[in-house]
View 1: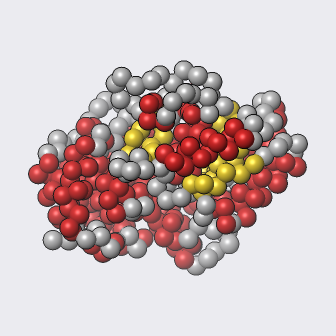
View 2: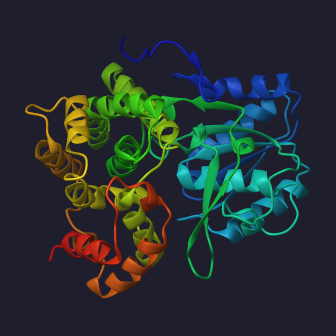
View 3: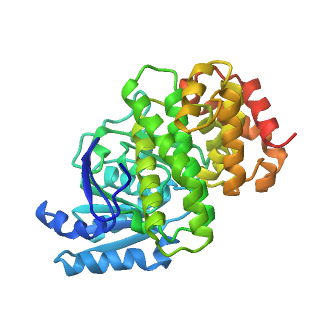
Length: 394
């Protein structure tokens, strides 16, 4: 069955999801029905330049709520943005949070949700042994994705960087799961082609790495494979429609809906685990401030070549899900490379503007990154250096 463009449908996995064109117009009545009165809309500075946040604020206020916007999210999210957001939450006497935007806005919104009523500093709650438990009141929390990328709108963790060291830290708790996701593809129709491409590669990387992650989780595997199928059938088309500035033909609406669902499926599937693509991409954001989706898009074929010999049968299944003729490791990797070219993703790190002088910093951060613990093939410091060297184009 194709994505329905004429109605909003509901899923209940892992939380309530209202999916369809116009779903965002249900937010006000939903919050009122749940007894909420003073929502804080958390969004990013770039999105705040567009009508979307202001329109939502007006709509919520018109429904009888008292809404306020916090638009202090910029670039890769850092702790100081969370601190500023918590201050606005308290000054507004907010009782709920509406996360509106892409992965950065979602991560900051979740962290504000965590710190609204928890003492101490954000990283006191990092997901490592010996830290503080998430055991205080959590404000009512809903998400409204405006990109089809991270899938964090359905996730239970937030990734925030240290302002000084730029090291990424993960805070995790099932209590950070949104009470409802309003997945409205209409909000993605106007995304530029480069944003569509980068966020789409982020979604695809989550799906592929989740499927390859070194653990047994058939539920996540099934979700990941269906997500790969949806991406294969929609991402290039979404990007082409973006290039053509298509205002929203029926087919454009349909493929945007498919991509938004694929992104959420990636966010669900990677609770199984991720892998070395993320461990090589995170340092690119840390060292060179690369957009996370762009970093994943650059690195994925290089890491897949490294992984292919460990689980070749899994690459056959991935290729089948993507609809590739003669499915196998080589054909799947060639498909990834061709997909990058079609989307305009740089072939190498150098083409994206980074200098090889940062190689050793990248390797150092990659070794420390937790994601490669689930990679299907163990990755040593030397392996990371070789992968980066090839990805630089040398």
